[in-house]
Length: 178
Image (cartoon, rainbow, N blue to C red; front, side):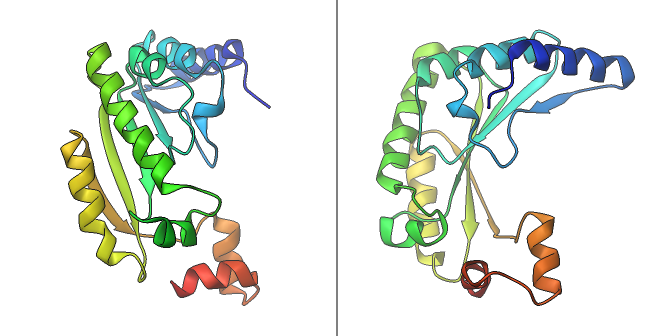
């Protein structure tokens, strides 16, 4: 389901009453852009003088203008390739051509809306995709996005525990081998 903006408001108020809050990340193992009220939620968080971040695989981008008009502090695009053959191995059911089209749309919407959002592409390194990192870096930087790369890590912690116990699922073992 989707969190109601009113619940997020309560969470923000409670957090602020208990400690100093400087940043909210409206994502965690989910795709925040699927939430129909995400722009409203970003604005609400930032109305409390709290920076708000989003992260997406960018296979969906319902309304880039509304997102950029909300002006999140940071927007991360997670990816693991530049061609479908490579990207599809670790972003299953994703389409890198859609991602690249959406990156262009996001850059254009950022300009149109005068957003100050820091957009950066976070490239997940695997043994099979190293040759594509420079291609994605160049594409990202031409759009005015920052680029960073890091070796992929096994997550969530339950999968790490399965790995340590020798109980990793076959499909996860394939990813670890990469």
